Image (cartoon, one colour):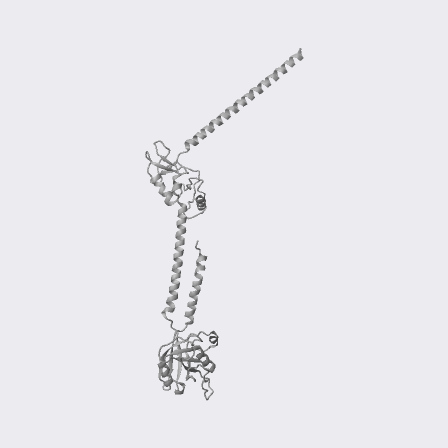
Length: 381
């Protein structure tokens, strides 16, 4: 049987999956970002970029810093540190790195070791954006700075108009919007799993209900064991409780163990398709002792209380003459009469014996009186 605990156990991993995606929505992992550049003459431009799949994420309000070109430009070896300001002011520097010749994670790690707070890697001979990844776990553990990827034309504009040497600065702004697939795919998965669980639950319940209904019905072989009686005038039957028609000559009546009788055409569908109980007294129809398995199941079901259980259950031995019951009054009357006759005979025997005892006692008393009278006469003489 499918219970609440089983359903909860099945749903628990999927709830964890849903919680994971909800947590991801709360943290809003960025899948896109923008590079907003500001020149010394207050001219600004925005360039598209793509955040890397490693390192720290960009702050929610963005990362502002001065853009410096890496030396060497591919950053496959240790690069020059950021410039030192004259007033010793603490400033954020972002390094611009060329693609190719080594892995992305190594480029970003060299930028971090040089003292830069972020890295911007640009494409070569293409403006396509690439999602930077890494397969080296040791390097990934060391990277603490964010990094983004831009196209070649964007890198050229940044170098010419917005570099630190030109008096400009840039702001790396994360785009916290999530694509539709991020919501749709897990939603469809969870909905599909819920539908599958619902279908499994409904199928299980249908099978259980069908099995329970089959146990509550009478089989064909059990039905054949119930006696059939052809109605004749003068029989102790009256009306069929199912169709409420009076019995006619030659009608086939099905006699149930509770002594109720019905038309075969009326009660047979009830027993084989509805429930194997008497329609009137609700007594179980058990044709023989051989049906141990089905009868034990049915007896357990009878003991269970349900909403269909009658408030007053009739006794198994109780039978009435109404609705086609066989009248047992005559047999009971005969038994009572025979028992009454036996009691009368016993009373007669008892009275006879008492009379005999009384007569015997009177004779004894009379003899005693005679003997006493004779003895008195002898004494007087």
